[in-house]
Image: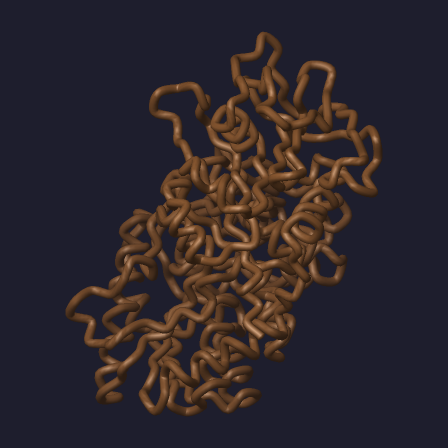
Length: 513
């Protein structure tokens, strides 16, 4: 059975929560795709979607250049749920009235519900929801009934049960809406008839079979970094075609303590993967010698990585496919939907003409990060690798402020290992989204034993975040910070001061460089 036959279309109108809506649908074990609002009714019909969700957006529906959907999609008989801007767009398109509100609603809001509504079946009659709007639905379209209100919003929700059309002014996808997931499940299961069969075990099994059919007897090459995305992608291909896949692991010497050995052990020994480890530490450090500017460091590492990868791949002869760990947020952030382009990803948008491959293999292109981790566990990848901390491509080079030397890397590796060990010992390794140590490049006076020291300062960085676009500094208990600090001072040479970074993003970034 193809579990994508039950797919839902999340129609993107540029809202900040567009990706989150898609993730929430997947969490309900229903497959969905985030696409532009410009899709025509005919295209939607041909794709066979079970339901459509309109996202929020920053515009007003009555503005001349506001994004509008194809009105014919309301005639397809496919259930539609409009959220925030999407609710207002549904109202206006079908003959209702939307206008600017004198009283704006932002944040947690008390809402009263008609629980006889399909959308609010088995829900509480009053609850807290997250509002974020300056316009409101002043008049509902013909044959719609109001199913929720708030003190300042006369239409917090509406529905036309006969046509399977639903709309909510609040955001059910955010955690601040208490029963938001229940409302989404009512839409997906009761309105759209989905059966919640988007299971990771099915995805893994189906993907391996599809890869076998696509690749046939041809060869595949993968740049394996040891990160969760490239690891899961490589293992899916390996399960499909075995030693037709060659993985090149470029160890640039900028990994965390023992990581290179761990990657080699897991994939070469545990999974018997055809893995080539290139120990290129001296080559990279030579190129980085004396370079302090963070952008120059990034470019040098990126360019050198490509050179090493090319040199190794040329030794293999003809290889038809390149495997990449592209995941769904990479695709969306690179401008496939209607949300602003957040950043361009090197592995999205096709290959250069002279790259020499017939095509690319991207087995994770439809998955969000949390789904990639679930796929990794399903494949048997050890938890320490699946839940490995996010790590930048340039590695520790951008956590060493200033120029990079082997001595500085050794100091940072030891300090970072202590921090990660203590976070794990105290159960913070899953609740804190990213944490690491930084060699700040600052030296300060200290007293150790009976003598004066003038040595390095280590900064600890830990943040909580749901999307890595914004982040808050983690409130780590003082006793844990104290233990980490004491261990670093006592166990790591040439460090006499440890500080904790309490800056959120923005104004700071998560990384220091």
